[in-house]
Amino acid sequence: MNLKLAQIFLASSVALVFSSAAIAQPSPAASKPMVIDAAAVDNSYQLYEGSVVKVDKKTRTIFFKNKEGESKFVAGPEIKNFDQIKKGDRLSVTYELAVAIELIKTKSDGIRSKVETNTVTSSKANEKPSETIANKTTIIADIVEVNRDKKLVSVKGPSGKITTVTVKNPALLADVNVGEQVKVIYYDAMAASITTPKK
Image (cartoon, rainbow, N blue to C red; front, side, top):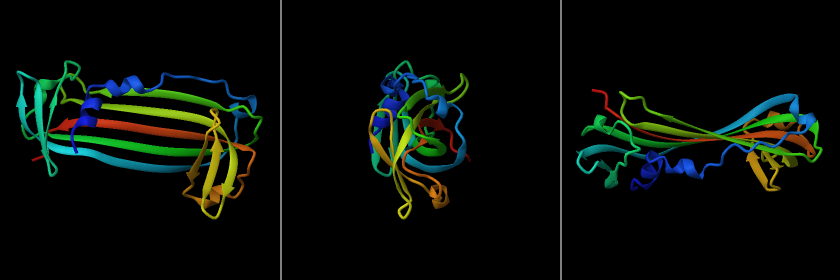
């Protein structure tokens, strides 16, 4: 795999595609929901992992190598702490996705809402370069279908799109019915970091 994802990430340009917070007013019934329980689905992916084999400080070019071959990345001025990068350091780029469902016991009044937020965390002045971009989307959605045999819940969000989510714990579906509302929270984060291997 090449370092295209790492380049985009480390250059922080992915932050431009994330939506700014857009808050819609929830219904009065949904403002104080009775939460029955929550279900979560977590997935984490290693997008890239490799070693620094060379650093050209004049051109700010970093050369990486892993079992798939060699790649290079030109670090722009937005990459802080460039001088901290040394030959033998490790680059790791990971992606994490989590979905949580809070079951809300209230009849749908047709009002749904969506709130999006994102945060960016960078390395400190004396640390090697690292950055994490995290996004959280909270949707109040209508339940349109429940399949207890397959542990599936289909919900319709504010845009009208229907999404089907797998619920790990089937007991959570015992008292969930079409017409009620759920709070669906999508969380995803991408992290890139350069570290010194432990000796």
